[in-house]
Length: 225
DNA sequence: AAGACACGCAACCGCTCCGTT
DNA sequence: AAACGGAGCGGTTGCGTGTCT
View: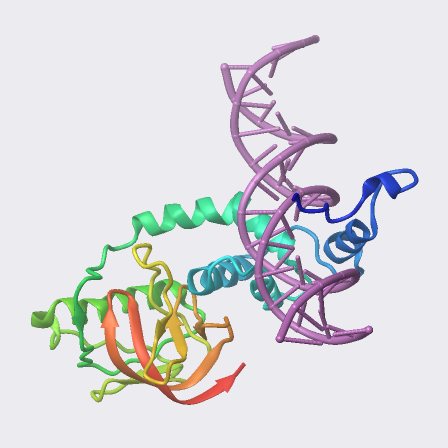
């Protein structure tokens, strides 16, 4: 037996033949007065990309992080523009070995300015290098003027704000990995640390291990932004 | 000038979830 | 507990418009 259509347009009397469901959708996606149309900012692009890396195509969750944007709008924007931009940028990024699971060793303390994404990504690569190239562990000290991140010798990282993180890894289906307490949290591109629901986190994070570009950690304290 | 092609985006389709009966 | 219906969601389509040849 076939499935019944979502609405019966033969009963719609005139005009564009919109049923109740179509009207509702049009209101939600287009006519609502608080909706922003077009013109995505660089910051919005970054948030969308970051969330997509972490939680996948959960457009409603992603849209909930962008004021005035609908899931449909975000989805269209991703499919038409960001997907290409994103695949181009990840092709250029450093390839990281994802097969080895290596305890993360930090030999330096560092802090990072939230705004300076480029510098931060360089820093991330350096951190990853520590996990994949043990012979270089003692060689670098990185520091910045602000104190958004600090890393100690005891495999823990403190995050005082929502900050930039590790580059995406296309070889993994999802950048979120379970921690010991069965919750999820991960780094992502462009300044966010979030859990499996896409909620942003800050607080103190204790690393268990690093798998490629993904860090497993327990967060001993967490604040919802 | 016109046909082909690419792109952006509103809307549709069909599925799942969840509250109600 | 089961059935039902509405709401919400993500994938996809189709149309209008712009660009290229």
